[in-house]
Image (cartoon, rainbow, N blue to C red; front, side, top):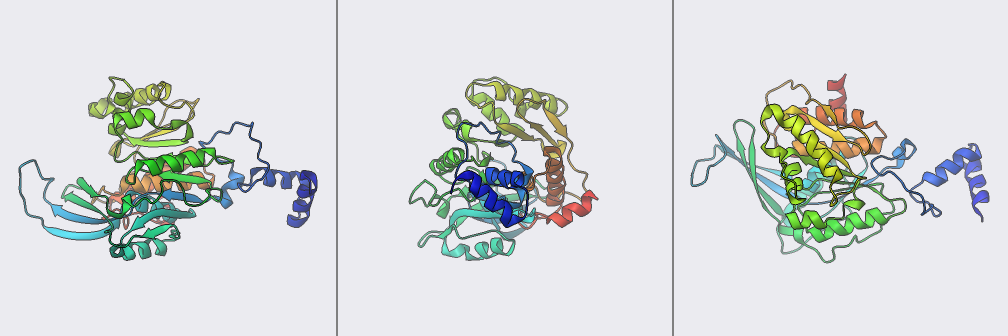
Length: 372
């Protein structure tokens, strides 16, 4: 069957003009004749694809142990905890949970020990697909020991556990059924790089989003395959780490509060022009309570303030992961960049008003109510 005949059959099947059937055939991510010579902007996807958008999160799963303290422990200091709470976490799990809470179709590719079955069940209850979540015998689920201070600040120590179970760094199945890939840096870097490369080489390429937390070493940053990335999400400190790794003396993370926005904006533009980086990558820089900066290639740096809170800050642990998950879900839904980011900011505002990394992520309905 040639292409013209196939288009005609699709038109008859879905009762639409051949021109619409051709568009469907051309844009479908299952396409067999996707033209390899065409260059695509992967910072966004056509809205016609939004109904079939699927995200794969390759990332970590942790059990978070929160030690509640009057303040973050200083070097050499011993203080008593006022409480201990165990919750589900891990940047991969948190971000997958947030994508699902935001209404996106998402699957998590990771590993847990037998002690993490309850985390798997919690993910499933939110709508996260767990067919790719492996259960590793004789290994513990990853751990995060979190100091949670009375003022809402936190400090985190990680133990990899099953997150570093790696029979092979390459994707175990084809990425052809996904449109988006979301990765962080709590699993072996070799696996993250393999997934990003596979996503970038797919036809069409996936929209890939990277949140480099914990931060990579300077050498790893210089060798990173930025050309396969669509969006980078960093905070001002991580932006400074990137610039320093690439040979710049600029460090927005050390800027005074009244200079932060200007210095971070300049840092984004400098990063974008650096030879180590890719000029096709969009950049989001979160500024905590000051809001966010965003940059689409070829446009000016934009700014959005943080959402107004309706309750006191309780816990900032999950805010970054909530933002990343809601951002990807916004891309998947076909929203404009500004609308997607405004939704992210409101979601993060609700998130920090509650406790826990995963449980604090609001539903899309809760976000819509506050946006109304």
